[in-house]
Length: 135
Image 1 (cartoon, rainbow, N blue to C red):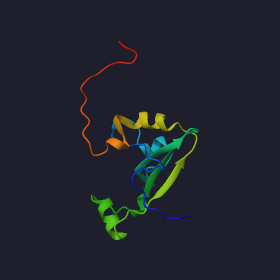
Image 2: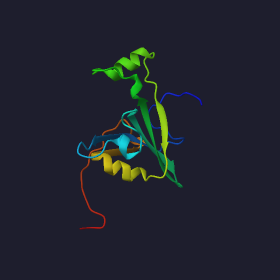
Image 3: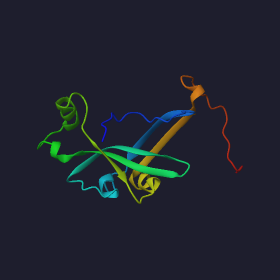
């Protein structure tokens, strides 16, 4: 296994670039439970949905709860500081799930905005709205 820094999304030819934010649902099951990771053993700190024309897959980035200390409120900064500035984590490929079903089950509010790469750094002013098909 080759170690790597888990960073921003990257594709070979980034025609579109953007951001995403998620407000997790507090009234439903934890993400660890939705993907069948034991929440007493793992804490998910990253979600990765990717793929291509043949389908998309879900991967999660998780840290072992063995790294936690009793009553540790700043656990992530402490773990990073103890490991040269990075958080040691495990990437899990989650099999036999629809990544978007997991996303819907875990999400209170989700927003993803992609823009044509050529527009990066420019404001886009929306000056009209419409419906397709027209309503």
